[in-house]
Image 1 (cartoon, rainbow, N blue to C red):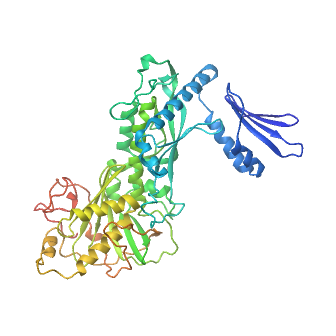
Image 2: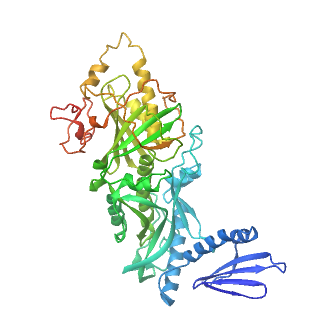
Image 3: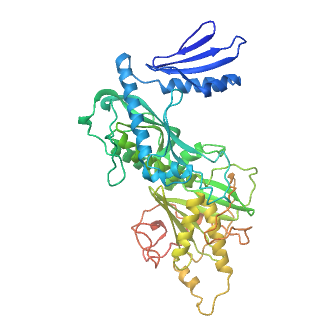
Length: 521
């Protein structure tokens, strides 16, 4: 950037904008203006307040952001054309947001961000780029006022709309591509004009969704992103690793040392009621290629109609990341906590995982399958804890969707199972529950203490009422040793280990050829 000063004005200049600081005779700041290329100077209240408060570090940071906003690739005429193309794209994206009838039905900002077709669009200004907020792990405060989450755990995923270099020339719009007057198709999307009817230019650049913050994305999702845009995400510089490992690196937890891909990761989570969970994520299971991911900081595209589909894929990945991260997201003091309950988290598919645990009052194992079919549909299915109960599955799904916390949901489940176990058996219901449960779990599971050296974490959340009560202090403490857990994942043919028919392919790694759960190793 360039800089020069007159008697009462300072100028910061770049190719596509300049920033003007008007000074008072006493040395104070009268006004700050930003002028884009070809436009008139516009007052900037945000820059003015930073200077008046003597927040020069904040001013420098915002000035850097302004420079990046206008830092468009190319030289001379190409740079000006790309700047014009980006402005046309911005107009289309803002109109998509305005025309989104689904967003108009949402009553909170959280609903707009998570469910709006194009999220929450923050309009571009001379001193602020176009930003799309598309996901937040905040729950709906109106429905879950009893849930608590620290500020460090609250995240809003956003994307700055900008431009980047391309090794291949792309056809980019030089005018808005939404038909005027605006019309909606049967699915509620705006009708776009064919590019043959719109002024376009072929240039060595692509539009970018610059992610804030960057997101760990699984390989299958990266491939699907490429299918939407027909523009591959460059793999140069991508570092692939198991998804949980990338999430651990980026969490607010303080991991003391790097965990190897094949190494099991064990974490302790403290919950209300002085209950502590231990979570094991087996390295051998998560290191498989289908569960590896890379951290993505930008997504290339060439047309505004790509954006809703891209945001949907990114949201889907963010929900999965949030659920897995809940097992190790928050640091708490002390490392000598004794674990009341132990759980093993295993991958099942690109969008589902399972949690194995020992129900109260039994020597068998149960499994909770968590399936995230899309960003708005999270389904929990419980196996091996007695007869199938659709109402329990439905209530667990509601709890998990609201709190987005695996430990809170499992604490709720365990409390409910404890109530069922402690309740007297009705004369009209023969005592067959245990017999029905025994055939689907090992009968000689041992009870051990696996609370070795591990990182300790805390989740300060209570549970919304969905037919379940908030768990109090644990009154039945059990644990499952790692020797009881099969070391391999999904290596045997898909079977139906339970009489109420789980999804094909689920939990095949626990099942023997006769349909029973395998004995402990």
